[in-house]
Image (cartoon, rainbow, N blue to C red; front, side, top):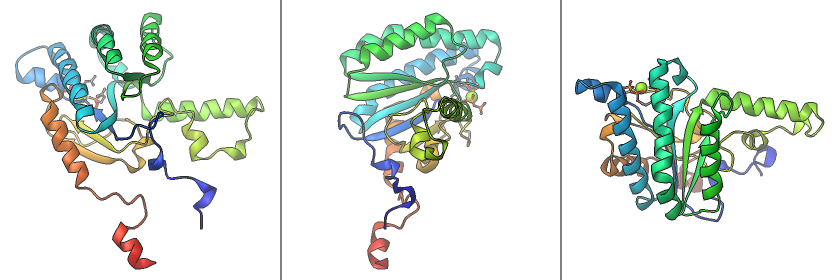
Length: 258
Ligand code: IPE
Ligand code: IPE
Ligand code: MG
């Protein structure tokens, strides 16, 4: 018997080009509290956070990750003071300026996911440049979620489908999980395996809501600026100890039940 709608399980998708490995997403949280604990302004925490990002990207591929999605700026982070928003945008720009060449050389494909509307043209140009220059790379995929919100992405996908239907390009009854997913800004990325959140909180804060359906959630009590390869290794070990069933039965139980 085939599954209703004939959907292939999303976890069977793989990277374009055939590379396989884990898709790990990280909510990089705790920069401000890291700085506060040291009597420093929040901006110091954000700067140290970029160094932690660099360390983590470096080690991810060696630890068996093929796609890493990091939460850089949420659609809700606009609620912060303007000076902090400008600082975070400045850091994104600085990260791309300083690291793009190295990422390009190492075969990293860079993608930026999230809403493009409301972003200045210089940021948009920088994003387009990074994506175009690295589009053919296959060794590793780095997705930066910037001006990203899970709800916003779902709404944008629904709107895009509705508009295509209004133009007569798609049949509304053809909407299913796959056609919906195709219009998310994360479309084409491998299925998400694990979400890591640092910074002592136990929530998703609107990150990858659709994609999290069967992702394993791991919370690590460390402020993001202190994060490094050992933390990522520990998270992946924890992931390795989890049993994923995707609504089915564990392998041994499937045999026993048949
Ligand atoms: C994460 O650190 C960085 C972003 C949200 C951009 P925070 O700035 O949220 O730091 P805390 O949570 O206030 O400590
Ligand atoms: C999530 O962290 C967003 C990013 C890491 C970019 P927040 O600090 O914004 O989340 P909340 O406000 O604590 O839920
Ligand atoms: Mg925070």
